[in-house]
Length: 356
Image 1 (cartoon, rainbow, N blue to C red):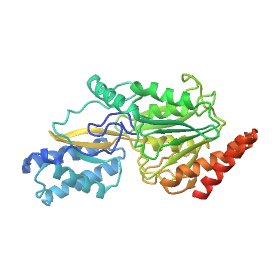
Image 2: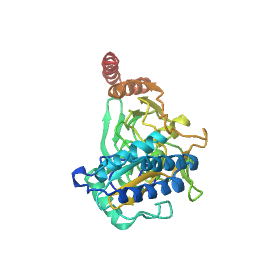
Image 3: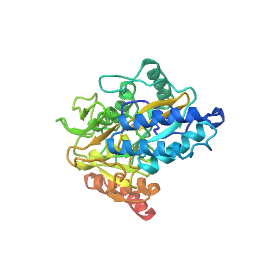
Image 4: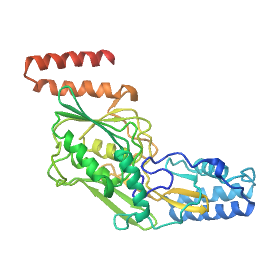
């Protein structure tokens, strides 16, 4: 699920989650390793978003096999770690990895706007999403009618739109909004468009495209002025908090709204992963998570792969909330006419600025 539109077997909405326990890994023969390397090389050549780089990584793992560099890997888990190291050395890509996953499911067609996630996987995602409240941790009204919204993933839009809608409806009446993505590791780009729609106006906005190389297919993502309930709208200030852990679809949200100058980004440069992925089984317990597409912003014609999204106001992640709160208060103070309320907010602002 990714800046992408598929669900990873081991990570769910948290895209770079831990692998399954290594102690369950089985012994590997030389023939097992050779077969896995051959299949991995084929998938990299055929599927990786950039053909030349895919061929380069494929040649690298075949060369390591030929040199005997995988002989020391005794288990699937060790082999996965070594393969990941080698393909990352050939071409760094933060979405690219080999993961140990006991009894990995067989390959399925890439989930897309027209080809959804299989029902059994959707059921597991729904159960996990309900337990996590679909990654929505907090909606809070701060002094000055500043709304604070924190969520740590963009769950699949087909199962999580109601949660996102509820949070954004609740925040719609704020004088300013702070959106905390410091622990958000990504998810579904359709959910990115859904949440962004609450921060935009009455006309559709073309937010981004994702191009998939193998199918020569482009998926486009637009805002929807007809989202349910009240919208925050296009005019009131919005601050987005980022950290080095902000990744993938969370970067998609931040990058595309920053480009159109709808938000002010406060915090650290983000992780730098812009390529949607697809899992491919390369042996019974190993899954190659391969970037198969790239994001394209309609204004910059590029994305944030490898560079991350740079903040408008650079500050350590643990200070980003304080900074955003202070900036938001400065924005809303001129609209506060009641003397007691204004005095209280001025005192709060002084405390925030002293803390900085």
